[in-house]
Image 1 (tube, rainbow, N blue to C red):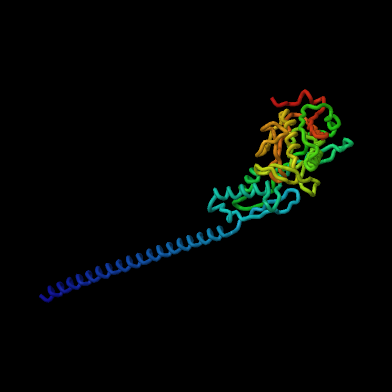
Image 2 (spheres, one colour):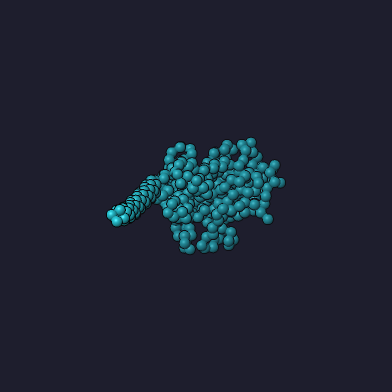
Length: 343
């Protein structure tokens, strides 16, 4: 009986020990699982913090990049001097690309054509002339700043910045020195207008402006500007007061009468196949040419401009007699058959 009880006690003890081991094993697993979960959560938190730090760093870099100025320097190709510098970001290169293009167009236009306070790079041709002895008095060639080309060059460097040279093109007169002596050969077009030679001031103004265009050489494809060739019609240049049309009214002004010179030139040159660049009519009818056949001018304002597209070089003669003004257009006999006339 005692032995039986000992066996039972042993079995009970073994069972209790097994139960305790099982409970301890479960707790260990729970502890390990909790520890692993904490470790995963910690790693996740560290990863999130790292991502946030990286995002913050990128944002800071982006802001620094946005704040970093990007300069474009525009260079005069002749002097190699910087004539204008601007920050592309200030003009909206990143924030407003379409407006940036508008701003660039404005810059190129002002550089080419000038502003009220500064002249532009575009320079109209002052044509060569012959003096009384037949020698050539050199004028100045036409200079053009190509606005679209400049805008394209600016756009190419707008992202990173850089230097851009002005695309300037100089066009010399389209005739050869050996042709000069022959340009007086034949008259291919002419026109005469009349005036009252007793009107002293007006007569003087016609004489001065006619003298300014007399013996002007117009090479092939040369552009002519009456205002540029004649210059200011003010007292400092010898012009006198005379009646002139201003905003539909007849008033006294320096240079009154020079429009008769420009209109006479227009009616002569119009017989040839020239291309008009600018031509304006008076606000009132004038008496020296038929209606619609006048070409009004005003220095600093309206101009009479054309391009010699006749295919040959020309010589302009302006002859003032008592009460009349004749403008002749001449060329070489060699070119007479090649000359293009207006149809």
